[in-house]
Image (cartoon, rainbow, N blue to C red; front, side):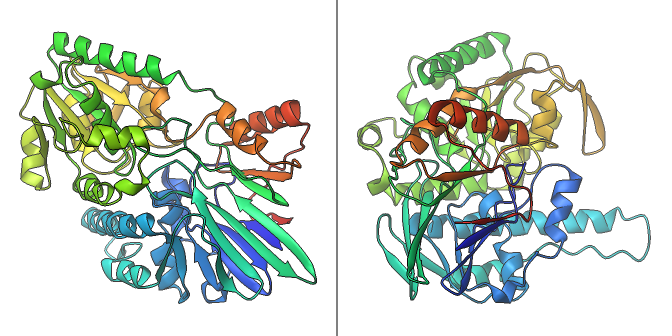
Length: 461
C-alpha cells in the first residue's frame, strides 16, 4: 500500500492523494487549488497521473478545495465510481454547479477584455461535466464497511467539519498482509454547533492528517460568541452595515444558528439580515433534510423559534437585481455572502460598496488562504482594486477565530491521541509553518516523528 501526495502539500487547497493498494489505484479527494493566480493556474495543468488509470475516487466532503476538480477528472477520462457520504452527495451538485457558473463567467470576462484577437478562454468545466460527476456518485453511510474491490475495504466516519464530512479508513489485504490507512479529511472542533464531534480512530499503519491550524489555538468559543455580540452592538451604534464573507456550506448555516440562539440578546430584530448566496440558500435545504446528523443540542434549537433558517427579518436573495438592491441600504444591514475568502462571488460587490466607509464592519469568520482578497484584507492591506475601482480600506475589520470549522492544534493532538500504538503520521492540508509547528507538537506530546511530504512524494503504508 502506497500513498502519493498530489495536492494540499504546503497549502490548504487542492486536496488530492493517490493510493495504490491491492492492485488498484484510488484517489482521496480531487479539489481545486485556490488563492492567487499562480495557485489557480494549477487547475489547468495536467494531472500527474492518467485519469483513466484510477479505479475509484473517495471524497471526504463537499468543500470545493476537496471536490472542485472532479469534473476535470471526468472530463479527462475518469469513468469509475465516486464514493462519498450521502449528505455530501446531496451537497455536491450545488457546489459544483456554482463552480461551473463562476468558471463560465470568468472565461466570458477574460474574453471580453482580452488584449489580443486570438485568445479564446474556455471555462475549466461546464454544467454538463458536473452532471457526469453526479452520475458517478455512490453514497456511503458512516461506519459501514464497503468492499470496493477484493481485498480493499472502505469505511467513512464523521469528521465533524461540515454536514457529511468524513474521515476515511482504507484497509487492504495484499501479499498476506493487512494494512490500514486513515485519512483525517478536515476535522472540526469539538462542540461545533449543529454537528456531532469527530469520530476517534484507534488503529492504523499510517495517518494522513490535515494541519490547517496545526500551529494555532482557537479562541474560546464562549468568548467568541461574546465578541460577536459586542461587534453587533458597536456596529449598530456606528450606523453602518456588517459584511460577513462566509462559505456556503457550514459557516453560513452556523452563523444563522448562532443568530437564532442569540436573537434577543444581540438585538438582531432591529437589523435587516440578507443571506445573499443562492448556493447557501440551497445548502440550507440540504441541512434541513439531514437533521438525523445533528447533535442533540441542535435538534432542540431547531424545534424552537426563531428557527435558524427562518429568522423573521431575514431575506434570501437569489436574483441578481435583488442582490444589487442591497447596496442601496447605507446602514442597518447584515449581509452574509460568498465566497468565504472573497476571491469570487457576490461578497466582492458588497465590499466594493462598503469597504470605503469607516462606519461599516467586515467580519472574517473562516480561514483566508494566501493570495486571496480575504487574506490581503486580514493582513492589513490599505487599498484594494475591485471591478476597476481603487478603494481605500476604511471599514472596521474583525477576524473571528473561534468559529473555525477546522479544529486547532489541541484538537488535532487529541484526535491523534486516540490511536493506541502511535502510528506513523504524514501532515498535509496546511501551510508549511503550520505543518512544522504541528510536527513539533506531535514530537513533544507523543514522541512521534511526523513526515512533512512534498508535492508528488510517495509514502509506504
